[in-house]
Length: 290
Ligand code: GUN
Image 1 (tube, rainbow, N blue to C red):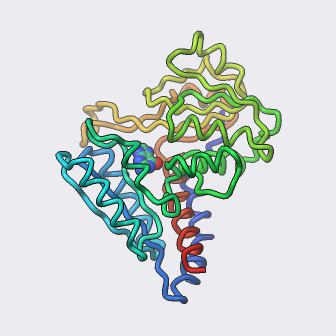
Image 2: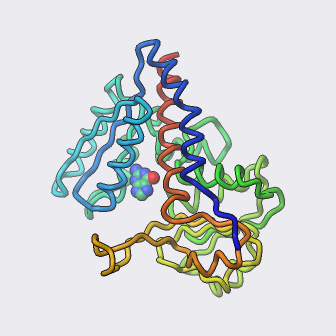
């Protein structure tokens, strides 16, 4: 039976380390501030944004929420981002993705000042990450690395297989895993991969970030592997009062029988993503107030 990698507990520990830093800033009259822009009413996005604002409040940080209707124009969205760029009480800017159809996500992201890009999504920060310069690391990949390291999983020389190639998880994660300090060998699987199971079965560390419910089955996992499930999928479930439940990209019950360690959904990667966002926002406030 796999060891459970408790993201909720680790997230609390990391946040406990942030608390004195927030207090030290407050003593100097600075309250770290996160601006959150939500366009439209996608229920999953609303719940992510609510969780991020709650995390700010719990740490004594400010969050400034701006909601725009799904009908907002690209220019309105970009203008909102620019107003946040210019506001000295805002240390971090988060534009919740996905944006409505027809809006250029790259134009909106590129409008975010790299100094306030606490999601690590701007081309400037992605470039800095790839060449190993100081930057804001993207929150989910950073949270995954912390989970793996804290679990004591050997990364040096390990074969890490990532299933999914998104700009916000798969691609940056591959980059972080090949850093000398981590030294994993990385394979990225995607929709064009032939015989994905052939790759996943060779993984010492298997990271599922494809957005496909329960894609990873027990026979795709090497016995003893560390399995990280980044998926957050709502699937219909008439037995629940909401009519749905959350499942990851991993068939949790069956894979738990094979893996050495595994993250649950919820309570695994999700709390770490939010925590690394708080971490980046505190760092940004510290930098701005130096
Ligand atoms: N949509 C899904 N994950 C994320 C995230 O980490 N940040 C933002 N801004 N949008 C998301």
